[in-house]
Length: 154
Image 1: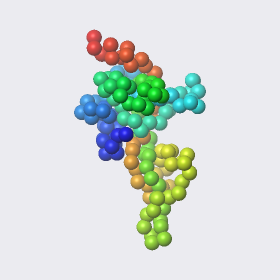
Image 2 (image 1 turned 90 degrees about the horizontal axis):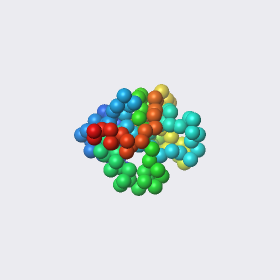
Image 3 (image 1 turned 180 degrees about the horizontal axis):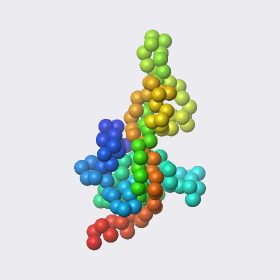
Image 4 (image 1 turned 90 degrees about the vertical axis):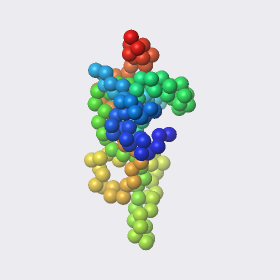
């Protein structure tokens, strides 16, 4: 898990989520992100337009992340290059007004709890505490990370 402040900073500035100081790896094909293919994803649709709250990575840290992150190693990491990683919205907690007029967490379904709030809908949710930025990846290419690392080292 990435600390919310660190996640926001690295996602906003497109810096590596692991080492924080390096800019994320960027080539003509775009910024480097790691993802796992959802079970319901269709081959021709995925990964174009995928929403992610995982910040991008530099090449060195991407290799380390695949080795050391249990989720990525267990689910099978896919390296993606996104030419247009546009800010989409936020993930967080929706609040409502309680009996004493103070905010209280709203009761939401399990599915809705994990859905990001798009920036275009933020006015419909005046009591929303964001914990992570979300980017929509456009112009996405699936790449072989080992080949990318070898090319960068030459």
